[in-house]
Amino acid sequence: MDSLSDFFRPGLSPDALPALNRLSAAWPYLAVFVTLFRGGDEEVLMRLLVLRELGSRAEAPYWTPQDIAQRFAYLNDTKLNTILGRLREGELLVYDSDGGHYALSDTARVALSALATLIDFAGDDVELGYLASQVAAGQAVGQVSDEALQHLLARLNELHAEFADALESQSEFRIRAAQHRLESVWRWVAKSTDVVRGLTCDERLSLTTLGQAQAIALAQSRMLALAGTFERRLAQLAAQRVHLGSSGLTSTDIADWLRHQGLARLAGLADGVIAANVEPAFLTTPELADVAEYELLGRERAREHDHALPAAASAETADAVEAERLLEAEALYDTLAALQLVPAGGVPIADAVLADSYNETAYRLSLLSLLGDPESRSDRGVIAALAKLPLALKGGDAVLALDHPEVASLSDAQLTVIPTSRDSTS
Image 1 (cartoon, rainbow, N blue to C red):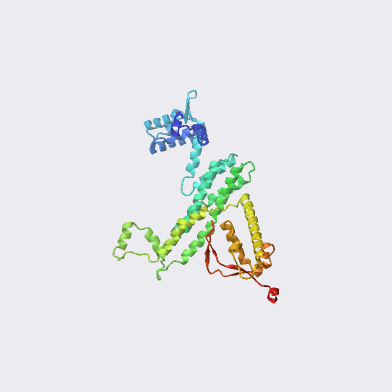
Image 2 (cartoon, one colour):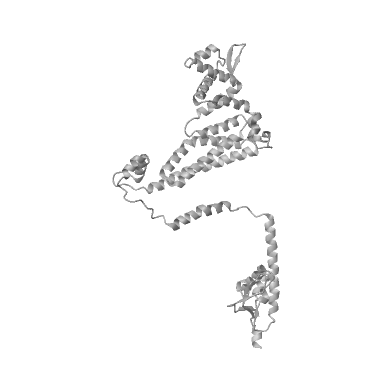
C-alpha cells in the first residue's frame, strides 16, 4: 500500500480520494479474493474447490490433517499440499496447534458466502436476480448498500435500452429475442419490485437511498411497459409477411432459414443467380440528405435545447422593455398629434419616426400601421389614441437615403391629414 502514490499525479495524496479509502478499509476481506484468484485458471478453480469443500461441513467445521487427506484422496498429494499452503499463507485456513486441527478464518467464511450467492445465480438472464438479491439482503439486515442500488438501476436501464433498440430495428428476429429476454427476467423484476416497495416504506432510509429506490421503480415500470409494445409490433410485422403460394411458408421462414446458413452455403446459393449488383433505387439523394440532416443536426439541437424556466431577472427585464416601448408610443402620439395642424400636402414620415437608434425608429415605423385601424380603436390607452388620429399614409414607392448613424434608408411615404366633415363644408 505504500506504493499507491506512484499511481497518482505529483502533489496528490491517495488519502484524499474517498473511494480509495473505502477500498482500503475493506482490504482484509479483499485480500482473500486476491489469494483465491491469483494464478492460472486451473489453479484458481482447484483452489476454490478445496476451500468450498472445507467450508461445506457445517456440523464439524474443524479438520484434522487425516480428515483433509481422506476428503481429497482424489487429488495429487503434491498439488493438494501446494493449495493448502497457499490458503494458509493467505490466512484463509488457520491451524490450531493446541487442538491439532484446521479451520476456516472469518474472512474466508465471508468470501465463501459471497461466492455461494454468485455461483447459485450463475447462468443466463439471472444477473438481475443476483443484483436484486444483494439489495434484498441489505434490506433484511437493515443496511442497504447504495452501490447495490446503483448497480441494479444501471442494469435495468441497460435492459430497457436493449429492448428499445430491438423495437427500433424493425427486425422480427431481434424483437422476438428481446421479448424472450424480457420474459426470462420477468420473475426477477417482480422480486425487485417487492424489494423496492419495502424500501420506499422504510422511514429510516436517507433521501439519497430513497431517491435511488424511486428511480429503480420508474425504470422497472418503463421496461415492463414494453411488453405490450412487443406484441403490437410483432402483430404489425406478421401482417406484412408474404405467403409463398400454398406451401405454408412465409417470407419470415425463408429469412430465418437463411440466417442459419453459413457464408459458403449462401455464396453457393447466389452463384449464377444474381447477374448484376443490386442497386437500391428507392434510396434517392434528397431522402438520404433529409435523414442525415436530422441525425447530424436535428437530434443534437433537441439535446441542447434549454427547457429551463426563465429566471426572475428575465421577467424584470421584460417589464422594463415594455415600459420603454410604452413611452416611445406616447412620444410618437404627441408628435403625430402636432402634425394635424399642418396644412394639406403631407409631411415626410421621417419627421415623425426617425429617432436616435435603429430599434426606436423601427418600432415607431411599425406603429404607423395602427392609423385608422378599426379594431385598434376599441382598445384602451395610447394604442387606441393612435388609431383614432385623423392621419393617413400616402406614397412610399421610393426609398430615401439618409445621413443617419444607424438608419441607412427610409420610405418616402408621407403623412397626410384626413379632412373632417367640418373642413369640407368650409
